[in-house]
Image (cartoon, rainbow, N blue to C red; front, side, top):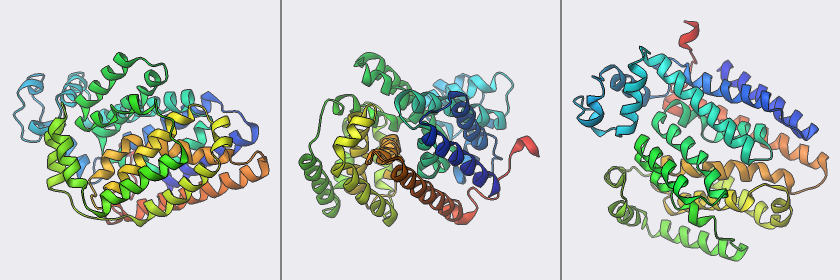
Length: 362
């Protein structure tokens, strides 16, 4: 467990330092994002749960570019062609599976460096929050999806600059890696809305009603029927979904929502692109409540988790007094530390991420 704890502690120290100085060193941020990318990417293939072993089998059974068009191995037959193309290209360079994962990890590290440094006020703090709110699962387990997520997050640049064609191009590219990425497409249009507190509450109540009436499966099936990409896979997830409620999601979301809605003016004036990230966060919240009894939805809402972590970091701006701000920051970091420890101990009965081993040091 020590590599995880040391990484989180190191990032937390730099997070507090950057808040005190009101300055973020891009060199330090780059080092830290590559560190988390390398930590995940250099893991041995037995870490990350069942999925990592599946990726290893796919990689080792590639025949060449013919698999992009006519895959023979049964695991490749249900894999997105863009990811197969990526695997074949890297394998053709003589790169083994271990270094393939490392390349993907470093790419995602570079991507979140660009995203966090370009669009957010507290990038190192947001990185620390991300370690407890998605890093372990997506970087270690959902390998295709984290690549697709990073591409979608890079597309935020074109949402901000109002360039629809480049935005769609990146979403389609991400969908070729993991078809679920198509779910990020509406963000371009949702960004146009400036929701009032009353509208937010109405939307949340509506999503709760959808969840209580168990309409999630019906809505999900209807959406899968009209999706140009990934509809069949989404339908399969819905039909094979297992119920399950993580009460921590609700214990977190409700107070965060309350704080951001009651301190909206202060946060808006201090947080870059707040409307965009709040709307992404709102989608995350609505999905969480509407599909509360579908465990599979956790993977789909991962695309919107960037809104969640940015909004959590924005809580530092509910007050203009630095001493209060540092208290809020310490609380956030301690809470994130506890959440990360819990995930390490719980996932796959404590064996999904533990004990950590890197192929670089074996």
